[in-house]
Length: 182
Image (cartoon, rainbow, N blue to C red; front, side, top):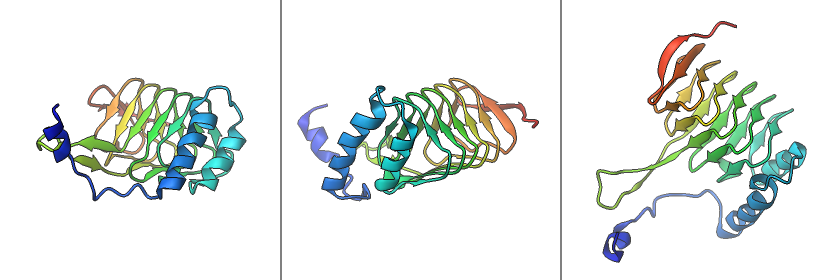
């Protein structure tokens, strides 16, 4: 890509939700306490997320190596587990319900780019994971997706459209394979 093409890229409309100082402080906090695998203490992470504006319920577990873009755009319900090396790219709102499991290496990606425009404009949409959702290891949930109550996205699958309640999905793109019985 040449510099002429780069200069056409314009997303002035995008709101990061916080000023430069807060974003910079979060960048270093995220690097030291979240991405860094040497901090296994979940309660410190929960405290820091709340300090930066995230809404976090009780008994939330956040494992080492988690990367969170903007905590002020994140809410997590009670008794939810965020596995090692999960990336929450919260360019828009990410709402995770109670009793959810986001397994190791999963990606919650709010952002994408419009490949049909020469300027490759940024596209952001919220993600909603309702109560009881399980996102399998190394799976991807894209912006605009709602994973309804107690749905499951199997290992290494991609959800680019909504998941029905009490259903199990697998593949890329994810397709419903059966009902979830609890």
